[in-house]
Length: 181
Image: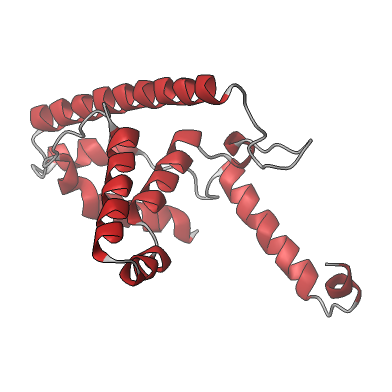
């Protein structure tokens, strides 16, 4: 970093400005303001794009599911913490700890992304499995599946939604408008 900074022709300053801009966006949100989801919903109902009662029922189901999922995740984290006997630094570096809230992010969302990455697996592991004999490869595959089942045991099932999805195009248009300014 020091070499880049001392022999810099403005790139380092631009890079730091770009990173600061991202952090500022995460802290403050877009300059054009926030999305008005209530106006989006009311507009869709008024033009007959959305059945109000069905949409409210779906939204209530999604809220209940998210609350149950959050409780499930907290319980699971508590169990893990009890099993390991402590809370290591999230960064793995002594004396340095960042929280997702420092960047305006929700910790549950970040953990969801981590779970999704773990579920996808890596192609390097698959290539290593190809080199194993079929019995060892099958044992490894079953162990991986068992681990996945153990991690997701008791996780609430996401409800099916149809009506809310009708807001997608309007939402994307509104989002583009807010982010373009």
